[in-house]
Length: 117
View: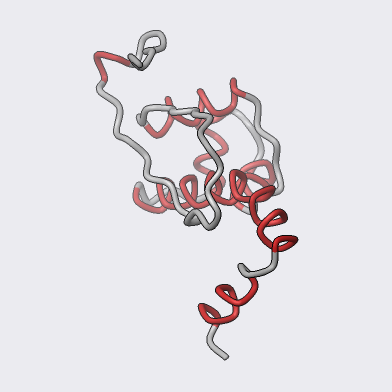
């Protein structure tokens, strides 16, 4: 059985969907951090130095094993020069395990923007 088929079969189980939803934000953040770090050619140690933390903390972030504060997320966005977007939205049944990161406009990096309804 292919992995994709296995996951699709698992997603028929409500308990699996609940468990997947609980870990999704950490995994999506981990994917973004890894992608952004690799795109820049940085090691975990280099990213840790830029963040002012230890390499082990970066590793925990990249494995979805950390619970970063908003301050840590802001620091990540500054280091990667991307916009931090935190959003609450309606639950979906089988959302993808991937998020896009929006490149920040340097002129907008001071302060926070509010989205208009």
